[in-house]
Length: 131
Image (cartoon, rainbow, N blue to C red):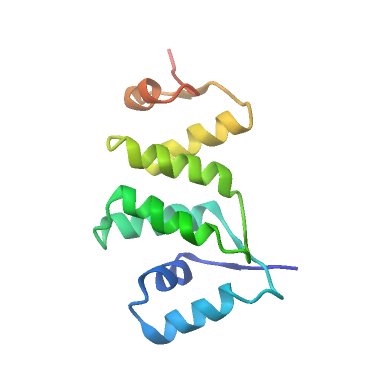
């Protein structure tokens, strides 16, 4: 059985700005006896907070969060999330949520992803304008 974490644990791990909480996050996420599930929503919120509130660039968010996803004790839907994060980093007009939806649709072979978002439809092959 695995545990799971929320956005705050991930942010304290990455930011190390609250030393006591950083130590707890490191202990929880580095215990080989207990795998930790990381939900996609927690990852999206983590990237959003890093980018919006901590002013971390998109490319640095992708690099830092990508490194966290390499931790051997973490489990989740990381391949799709990495693809979405890389797409988001390369396309500044797209939101991470939209990139994730398009990548998830493509991965699950549930395309097209119908959208009214012309930017998304123009920049991802899985997305198609609804008409």
